[in-house]
Every structure is written in C-alpha cells, then in structure tokens.
Length: 413
Image 1: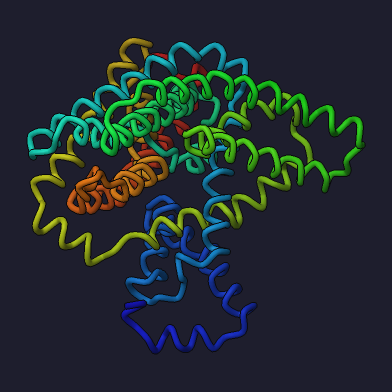
Image 2: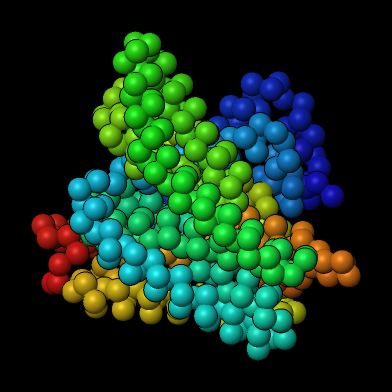
C-alpha cells in the first residue's frame, strides 16, 4: 500500500512535473527551518519529512524512483566528500594517531557490546559478530551542524571525522568476512584479497587520482565548468572502485575529499559544487532516510521486541559514550569535547543500514538468513533514534562550545 492519504496523492500526481519538483524542493528548504524553530537540528526536519512524504503516509515520493535514488546516493557521497575536503591536512596529520585510537575504541567497544547482546538473545557466533559490527560504524549526520557553528577545525571534530574512515572500513571488512562464512564457510584468501585491494586503493585515491586530476586540468586547460565535472567524475570513480573491491562508496568519497584538498584549493568549482550539494543532493539523502522508515514496523518492533531494542540502542549509546570519554581523557580534552565526539559518532545510518540490508538478504544453503527480520527491524529503530539523538546533542554541545570562543580546540578547560 502506498500512502494512507490517497486523495492527497492523487492531487499531487495531477500536478505538472515541474510543479511536483517545486513542491518537493520547497519542502526541502522549509522543513529544516521549521525544525530549527523547534530547537531541533535541521536534518531532523528532513528525516521527519521523509517519513511523511514517503510510502507509509502521504506516498508523494516513491523511494524506488531512479532519480530519487541517484540524488540520494550522490548526497551521501558528497556529504563524506566535503567531510574529507574540509579537514585541514596539517591538522589531520597531527591528529592521525589520535584518530586511530578513537576509531579503535569507538569501533571495538560497541562491537563487543552489540555482539554480546546478540549472543544473549540466542544468535550464533558469526551472526553476533556481524550484529556487533553494525553498531561499530557511524555516519557523520551532524556534520552540517558542526560546520555551521564554525567547529570543523576543532580537534574533537577532526578526531571524529578521522575515526569514521576507520570504523567504516573495519565494519565493512567484518561484513566481508561474515558473509562468505555464513554462505560457504571461512575462506581466508577472500579476506586476504580484500586487504590487498585496500592497501592498493588508499594511496591510489588519496595521491594518484588527485595528481591525475591536476595534470588533466593543466594539460586540457579546463574551464570552471570542466573543473566541476572532473570533481564529480573523481568522486563517482573513487566510490565505484571502492565498491568493486568490497568497501563502501562513502569510504572512497571521504578519501578522495582528502586527496582533492591538494589538487583543488578553494576554487569556484568546489564552491559551486558545495552550493549545489547542500541545497539539493545532501537534503535529498536525509529525506531518503525517512523514506525507508516504516511506522508500522517501528511500532511493532518497539512493542513486541522492546527488550532487544532497548539493549541494542542503549548498548550503542553507552558504548559510544565510553569510547568518547576514554579518548577525551587520554588526550586531555574537556567534557564538552568528549560529548561532541560522542554525538558525532552516535548516528547509525549509511554503512549500518547498507550492511544490515546486505546481511538480511544473504542466505545459506538451508535458506537461513545471516540476520533475521527482528534484527533488521531493530536496526531501523536504531537508525531513527540515533539520527535524532546525535544531531540534537551535537547542536546543543556545539553551540555551547562556539559560545565559549575557546581558542585552544580540544584543550582542557
């Protein structure tokens, strides 16, 4: 069934195509402002808007529409591209080891908690490891909030951004191991090939591809429009190759963002791409998250599997908090920076949902899924809860940090 309000849908479908676009784009512009008036992050407005516009309620937008899927995929990639592009490389190099430490903690602790919870609820070793990895990665959903507050250069933010690369790669490598084990048993050579591909891929994307782009710009003398096209081509290529070697496309987008910092300084092409991305593609990505949330499944899962949901969601929040506080204590950061790191690492969206859907669709010879519908529904609840909690806390803590005007990012108060 598409939509609970067929009359509204019929009126919408009778509008000219450009009229439908104008209405949807108007909502994309309006919903974040309404959320901000309610003292909620703008992305929460887009998430709720996706639920309302999606197939469960009004049914005005078909999430399977090819254009919507393309825009949402580009938005996801561009969000991570700008996360990499806006990192100051000198500061990133200085914080590289610290990012690794936080990445290890914010991956390892949630994975152990999630795996333990799954085991207590009767899931086998392989499924428990996979379920634990679903909690270990995170999506930088609140990054636009941090950017708007002028905190992109703060040490705690740089740590969270750097940790994203670690957690996504580690979570997807875990998926790459668990899938074949579930289907055919453990095959070490497949895991070895994935590691080899990663070892070749990282320098290719962060060093080789940016050099090629810079050379192309000089030899062909590309116009500003050409530069914009090359940027989009580089992002898409990096994401495509990442997926071909078993990684998530967002990892490639983040890495190419870091590399392009050297090839494209503050060019008009980058500025134009930023405007288009934040006005259209990235908001559509946030809307698309709401499209997949089923209110029926959400209510049913909370009502009938409340203990499992509480254990998974509560375990995730607690584990991510412990990881952030341990890292902040080790690096002598204050409490607000620990909370900011925690809030940035809480949202479970892109990699988590993608991995869960793949695991749910993977069956062995006996027709048994790697994860069942109960876990898939719990992941949907986890996505919605953390997508709201993370940005809300990021807005609150980030505003407090920005208001203090601390000139020593990440230092103890």
